[in-house]
Amino acid sequence: MEFETARKRMVDRLLEHDRIEREATAEALRTVPRHAFIPPDRREHAYHDRPLPIGDGQTISAPHMVAIVTDLLALDPGDRVLEIGTGCGYHAAVTAEALARTGRDGRDDHGASVYSVEYDSELADHARETLSEHGYDVDVRTGDGYEGWAEHAPYDRAYLTCAPESLPERVVEQIRPDGCVVGPVGRGQQTLVRAWRREDGDIDRETHGGVRFVPMRRDD
Ligand code: SAH
Image 1 (spheres, helix red, strand yellow):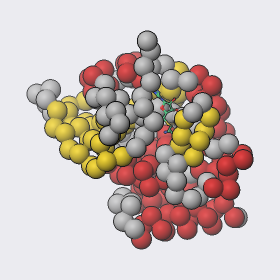
Image 2: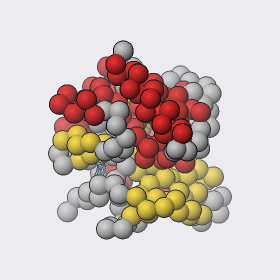
Image 3: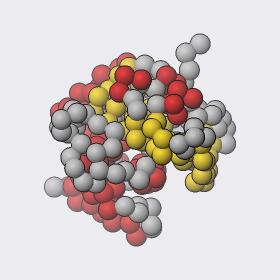
Image 4: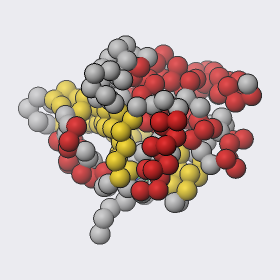
């Protein structure tokens, strides 16, 4: 299979360049068919390590960026994860796959353990379809990610695939103590941040370098 070979080569290259740390992340990238999540006319580029347009002016992140964010989530078996910015659903599938390879399969008694909020209803509908077609049990909701998704909180982990000016408070509130949120922060210059929520409610922030994601949109 042409796509499968290209995908495995891409992951080998990412590993050679130390872009992937965790085995579960590498296995997830080897497994999720990125080509199936992007528009048909872009599929030939699916396994190049670069971002691609997915419609509505949005882009799917480059695979190395998906790997970095997934690694930073430091997933534990059975974690419940919130994603802000479903886009085409690729990263959500990688997270679900990484979770399944981290230990206990997340798709058990609680139903989905990846929840994702997407601003654009067409992207959300399309992602929902692709995810279910490929057997990924991810719950997708159309809405404003600044609000998080209170119904399923608390989450062990959360991540953003679009950049706010500062970490959305509601999302941080929906993380359990000792959980973390990972995402790009800033307008213009963005920094990849991992924020751990402490027992006393304070936040420990680590920074992980400069990045470029689409800006997080906001209801006016
Ligand atoms: N993880 C995605 C990346 C999509 S790009 C993937 O694998 O394809 C970022 C996404 O964030 C876009 O789809 C954009 O519509 C969405 N987004 C932007 N602002 C948002 C907001 N306030 N709430 C939810 N999603 C938002």
